[in-house]
Structure formats: structure tokens, C-alpha cells
Amino acid sequence: MTEEQIRMRFARRLSLAQCEEIYDNLARLDATGVKYILYAGSLLGAVLYGEVLPWDDDVDVLLLEDVDRQWLQSRLPELTARQHCAQLVKIFRPAKGASSGVPPGTLSLDVLKSFRDGDQLCHRSMWGGIDRFPIDKVIPLRRLKFGPVDAWGPHCPQEFCQIKYGRACLESALPPFWDHVAKARTRYPQMRVPLAEIERVMRYRAHFEQS
Image (cartoon, rainbow, N blue to C red):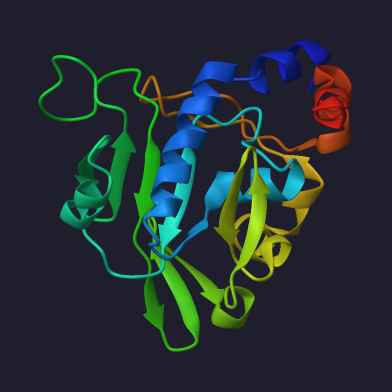
């Protein structure tokens, strides 16, 4: 992959103000006391950089207890909780004039459901299939730095990420295949690029060391 392609496919996707908004939404969810862990790309961001992945555009959490949209809405009256599908509730700041659905361009905190199957914690993916994680890799939970928020994560966050994304995920990255804000595929070829090369081209490492 050329440097120009890396710059395009791994460009920072959220502004500082947008990051502050989604961190604030996560902090509000955390304050409710609901049991959750950072999940998917958000957990990977916490593991690799201690914040949202530079090329990510939302925050994902996995609930560890059975609460519904109504419960979330009652604990987060200043935010909007919308049922996106059976497995997903999107939490976001309300927009003027929006009455239903998730308005275009909305930054959301995606709250996903989990279930137990014996000694495994499971998540039924919207994209098909079931992700399965040994419960001893999840519990006891631990606090992880995620931007300005101390968020809950699994007991073994690196191993958890490798179970979901493969062992290479801690050394290389795939370009985002979905734009959550535009609600469309990016159509970027899914080719792994070493993190060291991404950081060299994008100078992310210098940014994180200074912050």
C-alpha cells in the first residue's frame, strides 16, 4: 500500500469536538453503573493507543447484563437511546427536529447485547455469525484508559482483541470498511498494513506521545 493510500484510508476521522462528544456519552453511560466492556474497534483503540482508533468513527460497548432501550433511556434522559436492531441500541445527543431513527451524520455510542453460553461470553454479530470469548478472558473486569474516560474492559484485553480480530491485530490494521456517519461502505480494500508503517506515515505516534 502506498503512502498516499495509507493517508487516505487511515486518515483521522473525528475532530477533537466529535471525540469529546462521544467520550462524554460513554462517561454518562459508565456513570449509570450498568455492566459493560469496551468492544470491537473501541477496545482495540484502548489497547493500542488508549483512545479511539484514529481511523474509527464511533464507540462500541458490549453489555454484560440484560437491560433494554427503555432502561438506558431512563438513566440517560439528556441523551437519545434508539433501537437500531434487536442486538443494538444507539445512544446519541438529540438533534433539533429529529423525531425518529438516527439522523444522518449522527455520532453514536453503539450499545450491543451479549449472552452466556456455558463458559463463554457471546455476541451475535449484525454481520452474521457469533463471536465467542472464554469467560476467564472477560472476568474480572478491569479499568482501561480510553481518552479522558476510565472505561471497563475485559480482564485480558489483548487476548480478547486477538480472539475477535486474529493475532495480527496488535501489529497491523485493516482500513475501515464501514463509515458509521455516512452509513455506507468505504470500499477500501481490506489489506493489512503494519501499525509501524501507519504511524510513520500519519505521525500518530508523535501525537500520542505528546498528548
